[in-house]
Image (cartoon, rainbow, N blue to C red):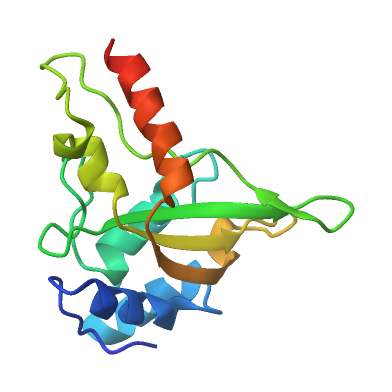
Length: 176
């Protein structure tokens, strides 16, 4: 499926590696790991990723299996050296065939146990949202397993100035 090589300090290298996912299913990713590592993925691990009620399970699968790093709740970007945050999110087609977001995209959580950085551009939110690697998959509830969902879009994304201003205003409201 993919060559297991990318420069974790180079956003473009990470994006090019991720683009090898296009047109693949999450089953393909698991199969590729088995082929690459010459071992089996534990059935309970596959079941955990396949749980349709587990929010973030498919993102965890890509983190653990494809990008080979352990999922965490660290406030830093997923690819720290490159400053890139991975976001895996669904889109859906409605009955009219129109595309829509499958769910809200959560950028980060705010800690209630430690002081919040007042300066947006010094905050962990900015670290996580200034450069996102967006991976979109088609959520088709008619399919037997969510591991059958197709990965259809991969891109690096920085919020445009208009959206960034809204995010900054929201951040200000939240910390106040």
